[in-house]
Length: 477
Ligand code: ATP
Ligand code: MN
Image (tube, rainbow, N blue to C red; front, side):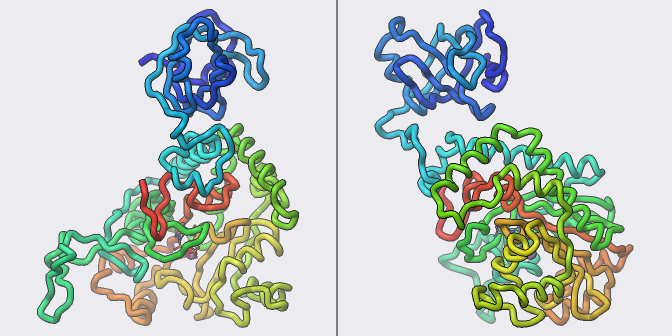
């Protein structure tokens, strides 16, 4: 089918040559003006029909949601905000849409409502903007790493190792759940299962990425990740996408530098390539803010927040320094934190992270050198015997967006830590082999893709930045 995309005609010059545009009707006003959108840009194209020339039955079919093709010439537009409009010569209806049952009316719908019709919400301005930005972000991430000589590694979605996610993993099985084979001891006999052993959906591609980094020096993964944690929060999904670079011959500082430049690169890229989407979302947020009490409004608009992050270095400090700040903070002294900070060693909750970022430093923060007790076994042990070379990046409005570390490359230390945490070493022989054959200092991190989308779009619920969210009690569509 020959069609011209709206993005290619919307700012062109008037022409007598016939142009065909295909898309979905947004609105049809006065039996004359059709607003058509084909998803190639935010803008609708205005098509003008002369209702006297057309059959009334046909005109009735031009209803919101209908898929149509219009052919005609481009004339200078009388209306505002567009250079041209299409004067319709030919009109074809591909698929009608019954206005009495089409759920998307030309009015504002709540995000909660739109989540229930996620199969149609792509057609709204908001989700059209969000998901185009999501695409550009994914593209920017690949470009960022490619430009720097990283290789994209596909790590497995199904994994038999549960070293990281004990208790938080989704099991994968083909066993008949109505008659589960048992061993003589009465345990489930996973030898009879598809893989001959218990298997799960991955919680991270890191361990496998480390193996590849020991050959390619610089690799990254970008794939779906699954957590069966029962977190009904606006920042957690059961299925989300994670970007995990892993770099050989790199230490904790290199790791922070890489993460900071990647985040800035993606933000910059979106600001350059998604101007109208960002302007739309910026305006949307402003309108929403007007409905809210003053203290709940954003101090800075979306575009200003993005510019601000680009033009400032992230604040870098240690966990120990952060604990001191939190201990002395007003909300802590006044008992405003749900989890008061009493002593060194406390795990930081999102309320603490957000205090540091939003109230204290008022910019993104990189926290490093956490107590080893609250971090994973593979993080490199610092000389103080208490902390590991971990780093988390905290963003305003979100909290943790990146979690990473320099990895423990010293075999004995790694084994000792695994022993302490009762992580079976025989099963993980392949991971330990990288420490036996050519171990080197290396580091990496995981960026939650949807958390970064939240920041860049200004959306506030993670369920609104992934097309089909999975969360407890919901796997619709
Ligand atoms: P949190 O403490 O926020 O639950 P985490 O420490 O469990 O996160 P990591 O295991 O460090 O998360 O995962 C790396 C990154 O993946 C996080 O920094 C975050 O951006 C993202 N992430 C983690 N869990 C989720 C989730 N359930 N939904 C969406 N993104 C997530
Ligand atoms: Mn983390």
